[in-house]
Image (cartoon, helix red, strand yellow):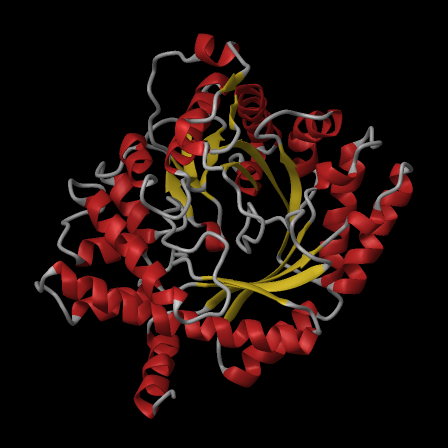
Length: 450
């Protein structure tokens, strides 16, 4: 039974602490669109999305008004495009059809220009990955992802090399926007099929015809709750985070159930990740600093983040019938005002961020590096992050922006939820011969679980 004090606490979190539903994401299967005629395929994809998601944005706005819960984004995620493009020779046609469909239904982003290549690549996979720079530079709201590794399969180093080159080329193609196209492309290890957050959202082959999922947020609410236990032992810190995460997730569960009912689409999952924004009072870094760190990135940051991530999951999982997606704490550099300031002041470097990804929800996210960073170095960073995911049986990812013409100490402006970021250094020594080997790094021993 929910009591009056809990209702008032939730209202305060929404009104004063920036609690929101970050996204309602409708997943749509495109398997029924398959045909060997690429023009027909593009049209069928457009028709399928515009029919299924016709009322998504309107419904989100109605729920927002009826319940008083801010819903920041409405999004669509579709079947990984490479799985339905076996006969397609011009993947950009499909990319543009997806982008056009997303714009027609009015969503903020559409995800699923995706290839799953953790063990090998089909011709369709290769063509899609090679087309990413053109596809994302010539569309507006389309997002792309590639899964290059899994604990079960190991790391596909050929795909890692291709993705590094794709990031570099995409940055050049969007040079006039500081490489902004790279913000729409993420490289995964152990990608999940029900992630509602962009840029990595896709509707996996294990899903049904459609589903509606919700991603919640609320770093500000957690930060405020921890102010009441300042100086107390970590046992009480963890308990406080768990209780707060429960309340945050209940809001997501309510919105997801209501969206499912009104849209007549199955309820998928609630992703209970703490997703920050560049706004003051909405920072994961500030939560870590509230635990007693002078600046996020200093010694102790990884331990603090591990506690936060675990407590969020423990508290949130009891609040929803279906928890999924990434669920934990995000540390995107440009999207978190505390992370931005920590990097600008030298407390956060790429190596420390990599260490922190061992215990957080995803990985190296929205990090700006010098524009002259080589494709091989980008690939090597992807490989390092994939290794963390593979060995630890967790999802990891890389969303890197080699900002054209920018050097260490410069800043790049992305705007909106993407914020801004200082350009941080990469190691100056070459990884080219390492990446040139190609092949596959074998799966670890802990993959043998049958």
